[in-house]
Image 1: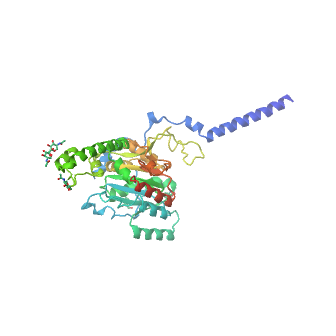
Image 2: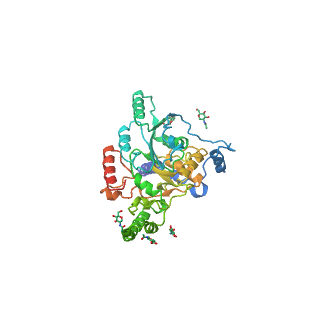
Image 3: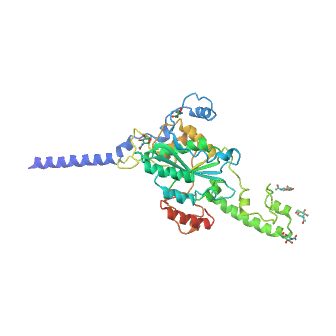
Length: 402
Ligand SMILES: *[C@@H]1O[C@H](CO)[C@@H](O)[C@H](O)[C@H]1NC(C)=O
Ligand SMILES: *[C@@H]1O[C@H](CO)[C@@H](O)[C@H](O)[C@H]1NC(C)=O
Ligand SMILES: *[C@@H]1O[C@H](CO)[C@@H](O)[C@H](O)[C@H]1NC(C)=O
Ligand SMILES: *[C@@H]1O[C@H](CO)[C@@H](O)[C@H](O)[C@H]1NC(C)=O
Ligand SMILES: *[C@@H]1O[C@H](CO)[C@@H](O)[C@H](O)[C@H]1NC(C)=O
């Protein structure tokens, strides 16, 4: 009797240990044990001093080492005209580059008449393009609808790669390439997915003072109130030189009625220097998923470290001109990685650009409790319903925050 119980017991024991081991393996416990320490050992091909090659490439010299990575897909439509007039006229202040899927026609319609509207401001030049790939199987009907849409709006940048989730890095980098090739003189570039709400008005305020946004606006409001009080005393005698002094002697003309608009006063704020490398959005520090059922599962072979580099979630991020160019050329010396936000994190690290976090880029949907709740929101995820997007945007715009 006794030995049989023993065997049974042993078997049960072995089976449960084996199960436990399998479970641990499935949830990635052993993988975690073999991860390399990011802080001490992170390095990513191409190794070495790539920045001198980047410099040479950017300045049209022959680099010592040729690029190892180009996203050299051809453009089916390249929207060359978008920023064409820049040679003679002022360059765009903000370019909106929206990652979209071919079939999302109604989202693009909604974005065109809300936050993507190029004529939103009479005095700030904005340009909008949608980035598309192509379907895995040729689909002539879908493509002819896209061609029609292009003929109507002339705002689609379509590139010849298969539009799939794990090709997002290709899509993003084709956006960089398009901007460098066809819209190279803009001040800021905002990348966003087509299920986002964006406030271009707030973005334009953000880029004036990103580190102190939105607090600096509150201070500006206080300064404005003070100024208004002083103006109300001085305007009584219509003396323009006094008003000019109260406003801090800007070179701008003082309107004949003596009152400066709020916008004019905001324009006197500091402007970021042209060479600033701003790469901003919702910034994450996180670890790779080793859980085998995860959509984002990564093997040790693909990425051996225990942490990702600091990265900005790819749904919405903002770049200054200098950051866009530097990161584009650094990407040519950075091996491809299939998650676009991680890839840009690696590129930024190699470029020596530290991503800037702002809570006003909402990775989830920013709760909407009336327009006031969106006073400072720069971007919010979760607007896959085009009607909702237009409705909310109109409300927030009417309140002056979009
Ligand atoms: C990109 O592709 C074009 C045409 O396919 C080719 O002429 C060009 O040399 C390629 N550029 C690079 C950098 O690979
Ligand atoms: C990504 O695009 C390339 C080029 O079109 C294609 O060969 C590849 O199969 C695509 N990848 C996925 C995951 O669909
Ligand atoms: C100031 O200007 C207003 C409008 O331009 C005018 O009606 C008013 O008489 C002026 N006041 C003085 C003191 O000049
Ligand atoms: C306007 O103000 C300046 C400086 O405060 C003063 O010198 C000048 O006399 C004033 N002019 C008039 C017309 O009040
Ligand atoms: C403003 O301009 C006046 C003359 O136009 C000058 O005397 C004064 O010093 C200036 N003030 C500032 C703060 O620049």
